[in-house]
Structure formats: structure tokens, C-alpha cells
Image 1 (tube, rainbow, N blue to C red):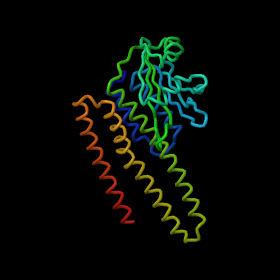
Image 2 (cartoon, helix red, strand yellow):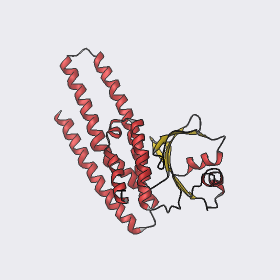
Image 3 (spheres, rainbow, N blue to C red):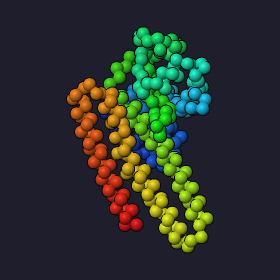
Image 4 (tube, rainbow, N blue to C red):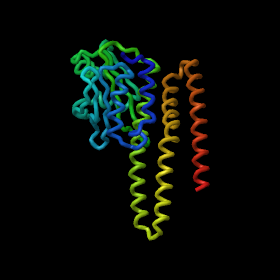
Length: 262
């Protein structure tokens, strides 16, 4: 039995607590996320492109084809080959186009990709990390797609989770360095174990309890920006933002208490 749209969204939202995400296993997480996004948006193909600032190109990390159920990576998009397209991807947070659009900035995409591959709709969303462009998520449909709020939320949350997973990877590396530093200190073995456990506990709590509401808050802020003119949607998102902020405040209070007790 095929999944309903609500079930697809529910399975996507479970990604916010997936083990690879919280553990900073970046490649494993992308391998889970990209197919899940594809199914959640009823898309033909979804991809994640990592931005290489030093080369000014987007490198294809993974694509998922819903028809073949296969994942793959492809060639990089560099500025010399796709100058207008690369410029647009770096400039626009969110892009949505279909094969009937008359947009000079997207003409090469429409002619060389959409029409050539018998696609109708295409969308992208930027991923940011540490105040820099980290990559983009792209989605393709074979039928005309009206880009609704639910679709925006999926891409916003996906971008936030990708950034969150990369942060977790960096924290994992930092924790490893701390452990190495502890091993060189001339202190009692029990004290080393105690310090190492505190570091691990703190990292675990941060990943599992703090990052979840924080990533949702970041996604909601971007979603509010995209729906600024809709008063009803704006009010609903604002209420959700307040709720997630309270959840984050509670999590921080618990973490502070844990630190004080330790």
C-alpha cells in the first residue's frame, strides 16, 4: 500500500532524530535524507550539491532517482560551464521554475536540462553553515508542481538538518581531539575517565536535545520570511516559533543544571 502524503511528511520529520544526524555521520545522513525528501515531495529526483568555495563550483554528493530507486553522484557544476546558473544558485535562497517559464536567467537550465530530460518543474534551496553557503538541495518533477508551504517546509528543514549534521561532525572531531589531549595529561586514570564521560554526556545531550528545537527554529524563521505577506500563515508560524523557543529554553535549563551538579 502506498504512503499517504501525511505519512510521507511524518517519515521525513523523523529524520530530525535519526542516529546519523545526531552522531555527525554526514555521508550516511545524506544517504538517508535525499531519498526521504524525494518521497516526501513526490518528486522524480532529489540531489544535494556541496559548494566548493575555492573552486566556485557545486559538487554532486548524491542524487536519488525515484523511478529506479537508485542513488548516484554526478559531475560538478562549475562557473565556467554554467555561469548564469551558478550565479543564481549562489544568489537566491529558494528557486522554483517550470518548463513553461520565460526567465532569461534560467534559460540554460530550462533548455539544457528540463526540456532535454522531459522534466516540467524544478526547485532548489540553499544550505548554509557558519554564515557561509554550504550547498544546495535540488528537486525535479515530471509534472507541473505548485510549490506550496508544505514543500517549502520540507526543503527548509532539510537544509537545517544538513547544517546540523555537519556541526555534529565537527563536534565529533573536536571531542576526539579533547580525548587525545586528556590522554597526554599526567592525571589519575579515574579522573581522565570522569572528564571523558562528562565530555561525551555533554556532546550527547547537545546533539539529542538542544539541536532539535534549534534546527526547527531556524527553519521556521526562514519559512516566516517566505510567507511574510500571509497574515494567517505568519501568525501560525509565529505560535510554532514561540513553542519551539520555549522547548529550547527548557533544554538549556536542564543542561545548565546538569553542569552545575557535575
